[in-house]
Length: 65
Image 1 (cartoon, rainbow, N blue to C red):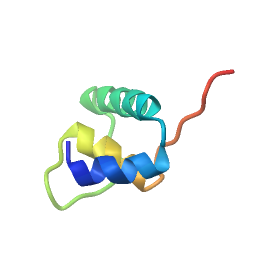
Image 2 (cartoon, rainbow, N blue to C red; image 1 turned 180 degrees about the horizontal axis):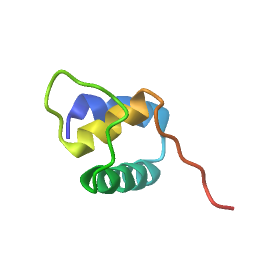
Image 3 (cartoon, rainbow, N blue to C red; image 1 turned 30 degrees about the vertical axis):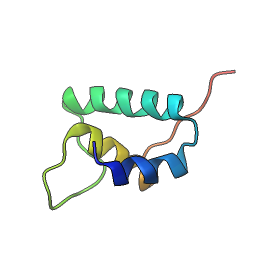
Image 4 (tube, rainbow, N blue to C red; image 1 turned 180 degrees about the vertical axis):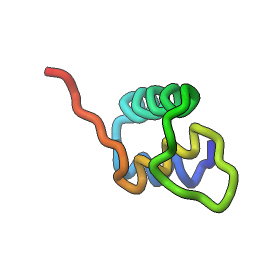
């Protein structure tokens, strides 16, 4: 995973545990065939795609009460 993407995603989702869970779930979806919500000229791995989606506000999360 790209360090710059991690730093930017941490600005959006402050809690590292939540960030890990959101990225993990999205990576699983991407590996099962879901299309990326962001476009890139470079070849990105699923982890970096998930981080870019978070940075660009394409995916969000909510906590269960």
